[in-house]
Image 1: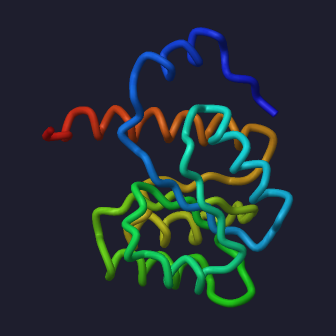
Image 2: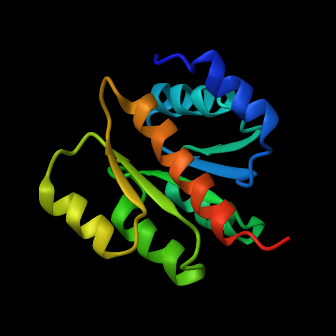
Length: 145
C-alpha cells in the first residue's frame, strides 16, 4: 500500500475536504476494503461500501460526492451502472476501477461520463489519491459557499 507523505497528511488536516460522501462499489471484498482503508487514511470519513451495483443504485438519493465503481460485477456491469448513475445525476463524478486493460472498455466508460478509469494494480492507491486531488481542486474552483 502506498503511504501518504507527512506533508500530504498535514495538507489534509489543514484543508477541509469538499468531497464528503464517497461510495465504493465492488464485489471483490478484498479490493473494496483496501480502497476504503486508503480513502479513510487520506482523511475521508464518510466512505460507504457496496458489494453490488443494485445496492448503490438504491442509495443514490443520499447524493454521494463521488463514486468509485468496479467494472465487472455479477449483478450489473459497471458500464450499465455508470449509465444509470448518470441518468440519475450527471454531475456525480464516477471513477471506474477495473482489472480490465481493454482500451474499448476504458473509452466506453469515458464516453458514458466516467471522470477517470483506473486499472487495478500496484499503483491503485496512488491513482486514487491523484484522482481525489484532481476532484478536490475542481470542487475548490467551482464551490460556491
